[in-house]
Image (tube, rainbow, N blue to C red; front, side):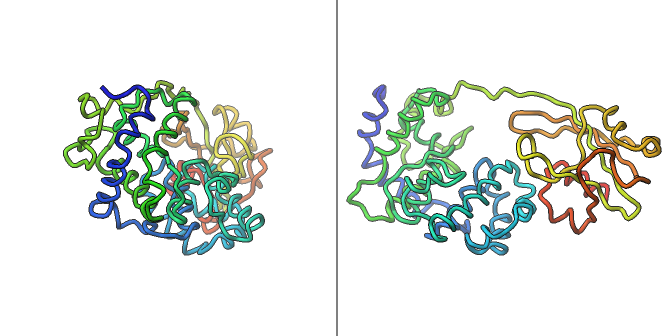
Length: 358
């Protein structure tokens, strides 16, 4: 049985674990991704933010489009929020885009356009947490700091048979301490930290997967306490479940005689904060009340569908109308033609509705 103290377990395998991860990364790690191997903090930061809760295959196209439009942090800082949201549209979790824009502006103002070189300073920037800060400083400057994204948590909790509940802040701190213990030694070359960091991320993404891990292909299989127990899929442990809610929403697709669509900008807080959106209502009756009497008679019901958010299920009920009036009553929006709304930051289901009804 492994020691109960994760630090003791980490110290027992530290040197061998790091060496094997570095060696494996050089021969079997991912190498085709455009941000891999870069020592440019802007590129590393951009990829790390985009990859939060988003699959690599989805990020690839967005990453290149962002670089084409914003080749450096100064260009991103100078952009409008609407332009950033427009380019981000479809990636979801728009708070990332908002924080990314604020972060770029702070890098320009506080650090003269150059990302700081230490994880401690990086963590003072908007949207950069401990793991993202460590990734940037390790990849770009060889700082000996541990990351702990989802893939790395899975690898380390399995190797150490770390049974602590990661919904507990104290247990997560204990895992951070063990992760630091497993890093390559301070005497090693700077790039060993970068190769190790990339390697443990790659291992979690390609071999030590959530279900059916490929243990026979793992370079640290004989060091893995969870494999020895015969239960790698039991780790990591996280008991706290997301409480989901469900809500019905009526969305108004209103067009004028020029086929322009009526959109409003959402409030700075709440669902789809800061994005442009169709007018949303809590009921069909409320939607109808928002229209002029003549337009209410021309409303058409669309096909309802489910849109799933992280904590909430949205039951969307689209309704369309060709307006004969200046616009929906008491709605602080305006008409947008297709060229305009295609460039806006729009929630994914709203963009889908507009494309289908264009």
